[in-house]
Image 1 (cartoon, rainbow, N blue to C red):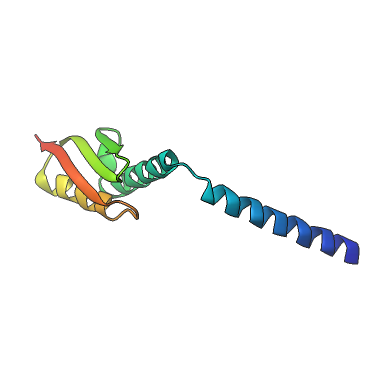
Image 2: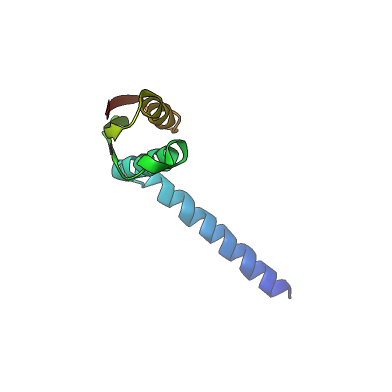
Length: 99
């Protein structure tokens, strides 16, 4: 029993070390992909009907550019605010057009 607990503790320590080293080696591209996914998730929550009609691009400087069309100014504003609320975003360029 003592040997199993020791083996489990060692496994958990190795797993923790491996996860920590992966986070340090994460390329900048992964950060942009993660930010884009977070923005898309927030857009889906803010304005569910426009999830697939809004374009999201993220630059290396973590500037988010939004494009597409919406039905009214309140949807445009809600999507912009949703993008701004994502951690890591430095600026939002809202190029969404209102029909």
